[in-house]
Length: 76
Image (cartoon, rainbow, N blue to C red; front, side):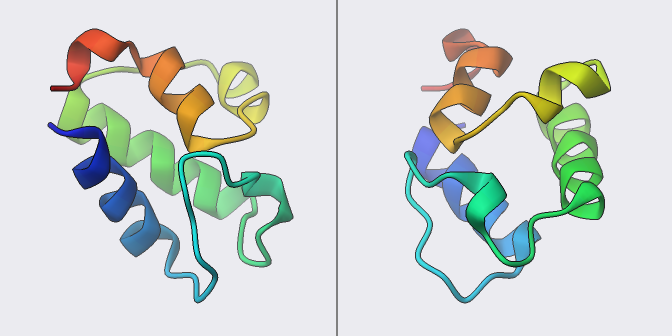
């Protein structure tokens, strides 16, 4: 999966009107809450076959950090 495709999928998943980039601070998004976090975790598990502890995901501040946690080897 390309990183840009991953970003587009996260944007669609979060269903936000705001512009999101790789550096966007997720916690500053109006619709970013525990449900959004669980949705992201489920998406990553389903599409990339990676699981995280809740505490790891709670520390993520941006898409870039999320990609680093997943591992660059999962992306083209």
